[in-house]
Length: 424
Image 1: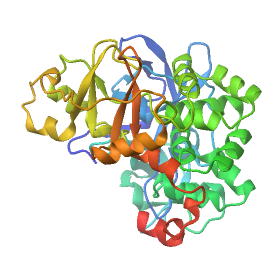
Image 2: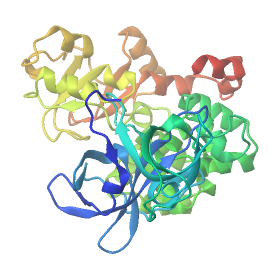
Image 3: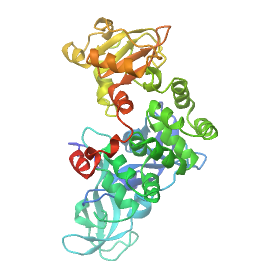
Image 4: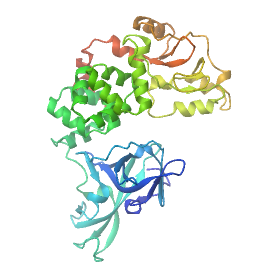
């Protein structure tokens, strides 16, 4: 846990207001959502159930929470308005943990859970259940009898899953320890029924990561079995280039229906990518590289590079452009590599250290030429620029490899059981 981080008891969060970064009210906390895990590991806190002024209850992921303080919760301001639906792997902390009768591991004595504390993990946005406040004896929360005490999560039995359980709940908890590519391999070898059960139980971001690693047939099968609103949410969570590839495999009417359900900005990125041929720079690129203006500093660039959700290939360099700084950008000026950022003082402007020698690629560049470019210049990503000089996106080496490897590369020994073991 974070040294000195305050412990928060969930009963103190019930009903507190939720605000966006501008101080505008979003709603109120009605519950917290946790996921049980295998191997005696503490339950992980996934997010909060927030009731809007319209009475609709939505799910707010903890990754969207920037502050949990006495009397208020602060969010990033990005809120998915889809109605909250509890999944098989999820437990409501206020609704299902409080007043639950459990046993102390050491003595076997039965106790009642009166409250639960949570704490944030170091250097991450992940939260876990930390301790339980319990009452001994058979008195419920409303009866003031019996000794009360605060115990570690591990001192109470009943809040972890059987390592060898057969339900989707236990399987998903086991998958939590694997990389997305290894989860994808495991899903690929399940029956269609089990594959659909596990996909339904994964959260949107995790399922998006896994879908990106699956063969196209599995992607289409899984996305086709999800409710349309959830399928759109998962597509939004995917990298735009991967979402575009998946949607291109669907019938035209299904594709348009899902695009209409996506957020307009996300759908626009995907539509733009779908306009290019698949095996060209435009069809391979992601529209979300790190873009900075020339007056940004090295410190600004390093802060962007540190973002945990960036792939190593995208974090290897930043692209310097005139505003606007979202693709398609203003005039592309050049690239600053990560190693150069480490060599210059934090106050240095990126515009003064930009590398403009390497010529960017046009979006119609064929895959073979993209591959040669990356190999010739020892690059892990390459900028894609249109005829007006605006940056459209970047092609990363992992996207190129996906299109160079044979269709059955996931069936090789590396992705068998030995590969999964090594990838843990």
